[in-house]
Amino acid sequence: MSDSETVPQAAVPEAAASAPALPGEALEIAAGYAFAGPALDLGALIWDGNCLPDAQVRIPLPMLNRHGLVAGATGTGKTKTLQLIAEQLSAQGVPVFLADVKGDLSGISRPGRLDDRVRSRTAEVHQQWTPVGFPAEFLALGGLGHGIPVRATITSFGPVLLSKVLQLNQTQEQSLGLIFHYADTKGLELVDLKDLRAVVAFLTSDEGRGELKNIGGLSTATAGVILRSLTAFEAQGMADFFGEPEFDTSELLRTAADGRGVVSVLELPAVQDKPQLFSTFLMWLLADLFHDLPEVGDADRPKLVFFFDEAHLLFSGASKAFLDSITQTVRLIRSKGVGVFFVTQTPKDVPGDVLAQLGNRVQHALRAFTPDDQKALRATVKTFPDSRYDLEELLTGLGTGEAVVTVLSEKGAPTPVAATRLRAPESLMGPADATALDEAVRSSTLHARYAQAVDRESAYEKLAAAQSQAPTEAAPTGRRQAAPREQQSVVEQVVGSGMFKSLARSLGTQLGREISRSLFGTARRRR
Image (cartoon, rainbow, N blue to C red):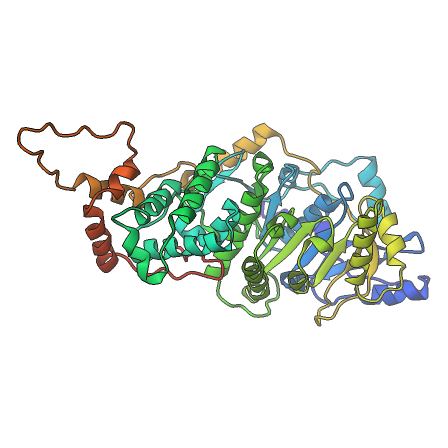
């Protein structure tokens, strides 16, 4: 954008207005959204079946770090709501992270197209619509997709999140924690899956079994489960997600040269069939940010707003300890200037303790075709403040691009519940052209930093080096030396070496140090 260009007018919040002709109830609701400071415009109030463009529904910008929920049945417009909010955050200089599960958010980088639907919607809500694209970076887990590869080392990912990915039970998770503890203290960096397999194999060998004796030990059965889980995980093509260069999450906090926030779009369609993987990876991104960011208190705008799509996948099958860690992370990361929006079908997908931390709500339509649907609908209604609407009837009758909204006011109090006809995004509503997407990735400043995987010396190589330095015993005179077993793995050779124990102890005293780990067992990156 040149110096002479300005941010499109529609992207900058307008002052809320209330006309005397509005019904009394609508005036009361509209007054709850008449904020004095900067705010994002969501749309126009719906009352008694009519769209009232003089009553604008908005979210105060400083309240975006108080977290939120975007919910609704499939096809009700959740993705467009994310796009609408992300555009306005970017326009006001706030970086945004979007998890693109379906692959249709890349269009945020391209100007939108004016058609009859857009023309109708903008007229209804009095939106001054201008087609515009926003600065975007495209990311992909392990490089599976068009984006810049996002990788994490096993060491920084930590035992708690890895246990969730591997679907380990509580006992196995605790044992994995001991393995990480041992590797940390001995200076054996776990960069990729083969590093972890090597350490597990050593700790269950005759040479290494005593290493964990004083802190509980590692049973052969539990080690077997962990090794089999790692093997199955790798067989599914997941090895590429762990390794180096590890993605620096501070890259998510950048602004463009024109002052707009960069929208980081993590492409996830290639791993849609690995829901626990991508949901847990998103939690790693949040945990890593939590490590590195300083406390900022109540800032005038967020440092980052993070949209966590398909959020129910994160909580499915999670242990109590895991859920407690999520709750505490969400509670504490607000003070570091990060807002988290969970995106899912119904509020019941999010545990109550987490839901209680979410101050902003955009609830699209719900379906009530079955008894379970009816139960979920009633449960959703109970999570809203008292309302002048019949919410059970309203939530089943909302159209596409309409939602029930309540947010936190500038004073931190909940606003009145407002049925809202949402604005139209100004960027392209749909995926960007694949050729243009690839070109954007190749021209990114991040490409040279992260595109090429690196395999440096870590635990596996150190174990292999120890084995190669082991003295070879001479064969007894007159007897032929036994041939090594065929197809013996490097790990089996290494863990059979008496040299490794002395090497590991040396590393523990000279190089190793206990790595400081967070609520999720993630390690602070060594910058």
